[in-house]
Image (tube, rainbow, N blue to C red; front, side):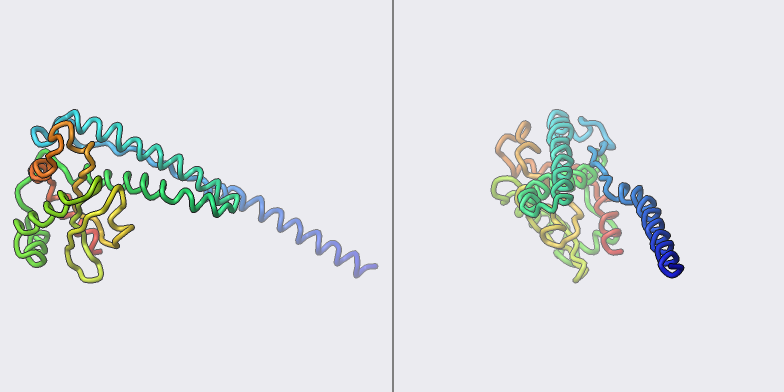
Length: 234
């Protein structure tokens, strides 16, 4: 009897410990489950600051409407994905992947794009970035011509990119369709992106994409691109 009573008390004690542990873990699990919502980043310049190269109407619509839509849709899609994860619904998780790629890529790409631009931009890069461009392309003009050609040649909608390849330490030019994010689809770290979706230029340049691509070099922030190269090398 004494043995049974002692064993029963020991089991009750362990049950109490498990319950206390569970109650302690619950808030922590809730914090893990809580999802950070994405938000539209502020610009560091006015919508009209990039004129005459990109007009204010394009910038206002592009930032406050198009980018905002990617952010909103990304948040909605992530909520649905969390629900699918909680239910163990693999079919729903798979079906949500295209929306995650499209809206997540749109948010990533545009967040880089705004910082790549500056009313004080243009000219040529300096320092380590300039040396890397000369090493990998022969000259700044050659890099500019190759990236412009690759960007103009994007079929339909997409992006032209200057990226950093970590494995080789080299700069590479790439083009991505739709809103595919550069790093997530090619492994290249994005340094400079040019958006060639029509909403980025049509109101001003109509269907003459080459003129838009030529003009955007006048507002490229080489300081930002240089900072991205430094970060990519770490």
